[in-house]
Image (cartoon, rainbow, N blue to C red; front, side, top):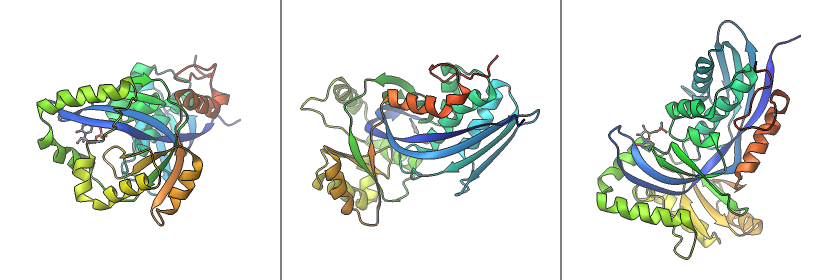
Length: 312
Ligand code: C5P
């Protein structure tokens, strides 16, 4: 009998419902305040693990992404578990890349969550968070899912209660925005005075969405002047009935929130050849159910992170 264990996973995308960049830190990263939200747009990952004395990681991804985070995540997880084996993965991308939607980060987090289950080992959330942080600033959020506040580098995460069911339209125009450059361009604008204001206005977003609810993404002020087509998409989203529209991450994707599906269908038509995806917000409880279902035959109970039934 084969000793290979297999699973099919969905790795969801995220939106930043608010994003403030405060200042550059001594470690070179920037101090953030953000609200993350998982959405229904997803990549697919098929993964097979076979225990072996020697580790080999093979990734079949149609785009042949260089130095893919997925392979790095597999090596990181196996090293941390002190396990060895053959890992074979196939990645089918749906989430536009380099768009601020967290696709690569989510794929990596999916590997961190699933591989210990297939390998019959336990990695607690503290260890997983440590590995996630080494892989990238957004990876840790996908160990949590739902809606969460991210502070520090974006890696200190605090869950927020899920909001009401929400439909959105994500527009990904395929404009390339360099994240390090966007941070560099923003740096001269970050003064200590605005830090205080930003913290208080961010706090008011998190506490409650009253009349003063004015979500911001600080990257818009440096990215829009370089790519006026993105500002035009934001306008189109608002004109087509979105209650709010914002860029996500450092771009270049934008999203609009709509009161119902019908408005989204109408809005979709105004984007012609530009890639646009109707999505819904995915709550933390749905996120976890999705994971438990995907890993069903390999886990014991419904715990978080999922625990392997093969663990001794
Ligand atoms: O951590 P990650 O690899 O996603 O970050 C990509 C780049 O974005 C970093 O090299 C850094 O230039 C910038 N960054 C930052 N502050 C953050 C997150 C990212 O300056 N909090």
